Picture (cartoon, rainbow, N blue to C red):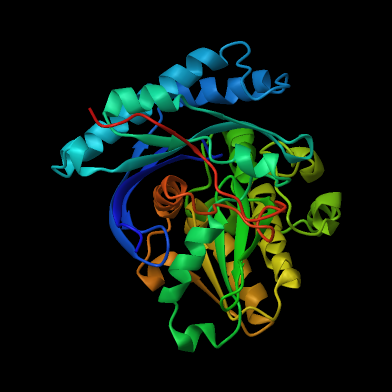
Length: 377
């Protein structure tokens, strides 16, 4: 019998807005007891430093390179994660000894699956020293060694959560978990088969870039700006004609694989509305790779708070008799799910269980991953 461990998961996603943190008690298999979660925001100056670092990261050719300011950013980012953990422990009156392992994602600054190259900033050893808790990090690399794309990694956690879906919602058909972060990805769960997972296209990234460039606004809160605009069908067509959409899964994206160039230069609301439609259409296209028409789409991540995206998803899914719900309607937390997943993956990593599968990343065989550092004094 696999031991139940108490793990903390840390996620800093492609939106680069801060650190999600979550506590999980799990055996890394079917037992999942969700605990408290939290969020530590990056101030705008640090976010800008990371954004500038993305440009410097384009010159990276081997995983350990840290050109320009990236080495300093990595140290600062790791220290912020350490402070987030210590603050979280204090807030919830927990000692470091009460935590068995930390799952540390770090900050992705480069993801080129065709080159078998993925780079996440984050010093696992430093984090272990700062928190006095063992850390699992670098969970994507071993997948690439075995022919995978290094993403997505969350699907095995989605599969564990799918047990919460009531039979009347699942209807014996596939259930799709959707994460709308900077990039959107899906996990298609059908019975006991391995999950099918892949990136679907842009999530919030292009919308964020658009409203920032056009109006100096960090993001379209609630989809309010988009709700006042019109869909520019020609621009939607340009995005949906991209070669990425004819690739069969598994497939994954770098944050910069889609740009604002295909949008043109419409007014603010029309641009936001059009990009919301692109996000939704790209997600719904995923149904083509399900073994049957999905019955339910469970939406996680920041994009579920964009009412315009959610309305487009609801309208599109209804055409095939499917329902769309936010994660909270299943008693889950759509903000902390990726952080929870990293806690879950950390426990699997410690026990040598597979993190990725041929149907999720394209790896040759189901493979474990992660580097474990630090130990109890």
